[in-house]
Amino acid sequence: MSEAENSLEFAMSLIAYSGDAKSHAMEAIYAAKKNAFEEAEKKLKLAEVSLLEAHHIQTNMLTKEAQGDEIKMSLLTIHSQDHLMTAITFKDMAAEMIDLYKKMDSKA
Figure: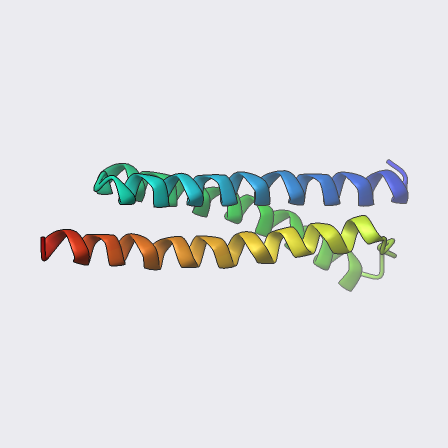
């Protein structure tokens, strides 16, 4: 696989897994809003699994670069990193919102 193909595969995989994580996190918030806390926790776990996959891809690319392989940086590569960081933040916020909905439910 060429360097350009490798970079494209890296970026697109990172975007896909990050998108999945963000979607699962949003579904977790929707579930918590309906007081479906078991479903919310399951969705949050799915978000974590997707983020773990994205992290593996990122770690693989960082390892290749550390070993001296040239990594082609492009706007798409940077964009994929932005998606990952947004998904991580979104998952963290979803966890906090689920906790908040649980506290609100326990006081109702």
